[in-house]
Image (tube, rainbow, N blue to C red; front, side, top):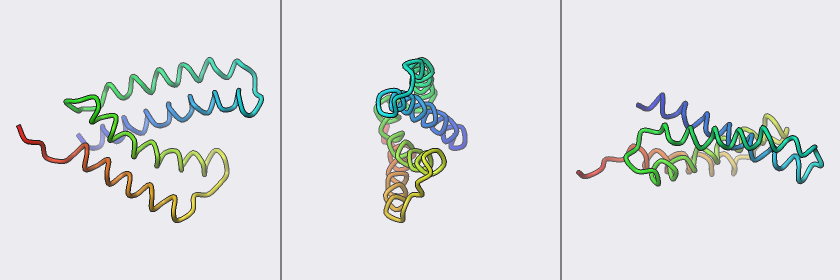
Length: 110
């Protein structure tokens, strides 16, 4: 369960960040409005990926995704925007990922 879940969350993060960046590029970087088209498609793919998470409750899947999104955003910051995350970014992301693991993998009473 862990490997497919991590891969699904990674795909969701990539799709969400790419979709949001497309809107950022249009509105903040002065790119063509045509950037919105792949942005909308990427955001729809993001929503689809979250439905694939093996969780009994949508809110729990979404909450656990939050930590993955934060870590993936820092990877985007580094690889796409060329700004290397500092130690505080990395510490914060590690704390968020630990919280995500607790939310998603913690034992539940029946």
